[in-house]
Length: 341
Image 1 (spheres, helix red, strand yellow):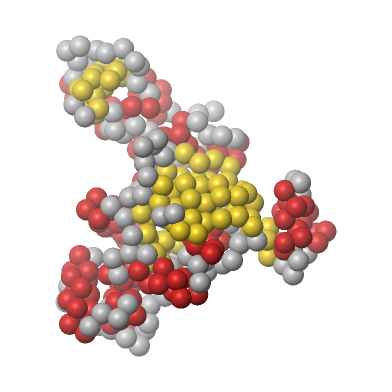
Image 2 (tube, helix red, strand yellow):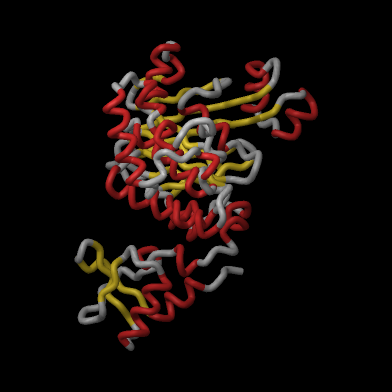
């Protein structure tokens, strides 16, 4: 997160242990007991260990990891679908864990909407009824519900399907309904738990495009769970990688790819298309190249390579907001695109 970014969600010293005597097990975990040892010796399951994460307002925070890493457990603490064993979750200065049941219901209704992997739609209701469900829970009148539902159905590309039942739709269309339902309540925070993982690759890419287009306009705070690194790199302003309930690295996509924290993260990134993930600004030299073709710092290496080849130049001037900030040579781009040993 940039130093001037406002923190929307602050998670501090968060632990979750599943079992009959979870609180007593926390000190054992703090003292270094592993997930496997905790289960074998005491019959308790370590869900989260000492998670500290600042989610920036209006950004997409990706949380990723393999199955069992704790990512879905983490996101469910933000709207308190799961109670922590220890730690705090603060949203806009309000302690979520200290909320009364009424305050928590209101928080879930209007502040934080959730989009699930398996859609969680109501099959006996139409698309319009599903999208307007959260609005009815908020107490809006019928006309307002219909108008807002219609607007969001249109925004996700489902105009004409308002009266269809969700069981009549494809998986990709069902997930559009789920996204429209979350957006219709105008919640500031979207909690998205592997929302696209059940979709075919082409449909999945299409849904990513829709989300990025909407985010460009709406500037929501999004916590997005995935086990797919390509998806994480494409969507995230910031990425937290979990392993066995613990955050092993938190950083920008460029941080993750260029400076993996350990062998576990390095193994995660070894097979990615580096040309589509690494930006020129991450590999540029500080000295300028006057008179050279210009390339924006946010340009990925694949596009930068094509641009330089097209001009016949060996070096490009790297710019940010139209101003020169450095330079990059053709051989440096090619070298950075190669898979590391």
